[in-house]
Length: 283
Ligand code: GLN
Image 1 (tube, rainbow, N blue to C red):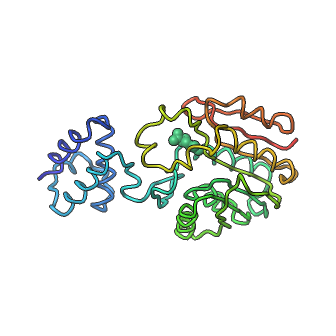
Image 2: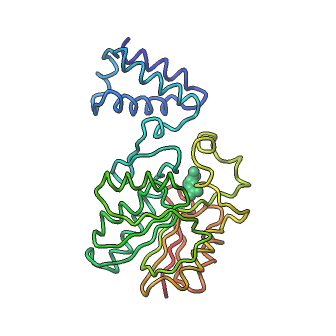
């Protein structure tokens, strides 16, 4: 069978879940992954034969896509900030918004400290570990701690740190129950921020395949994590320090207001124009 013929089957079988354009994009990703090639010439690629072994591999992935599994979990990896990271079902697949959070944080840290300063950074709810790993690559002298309640997430984050030859102090703990005792120059977090009342608005692919713990805070208050971060930062954020947060677009002002009386606070939009980040800088 030519890859073009397989493409027609692929698009047809996924038509309830993905548009034609999305299906072609997914097939390109799977083809590059299973055929182990980067293919700049897609036009001639579609005319090539697909051997039985690769057809079986991609057909197996197709069944998983039909079941709603995100492609990143099927191939076990994703690209974030231009780098490869392992992913699995125990973490939230890193999102483009979090790349924006990192960009904002990196430029703010660079404006205050030289690259080789021994700054201390805390990441709360690290998941796959992408945030501390990229920060450590950027600021090699920084001392970075990263927390997560999930043992499986911490295991994966450590694998990712190893993949990039990076040392991060990963700790498995329940942040909401923890009394923070160390001081930090910067606190960064993309905590669970979806209001359980918003369940209906979340796609089935996300709801059924990514961890509930990473998406929804454990209490009815969607701002739980931000309030705890505010309380901790009051005693544990060092001079010139700042807090970088990814937030729920529906609670932009409320999240900003938690910090506004003690910090110079900015509410920023993501590339799609939604309120997505709060940056709070020590006055
Ligand atoms: N942005 C993620 C989503 O919409 C949620 C991230 C989070 O809860 N921290 O799926």
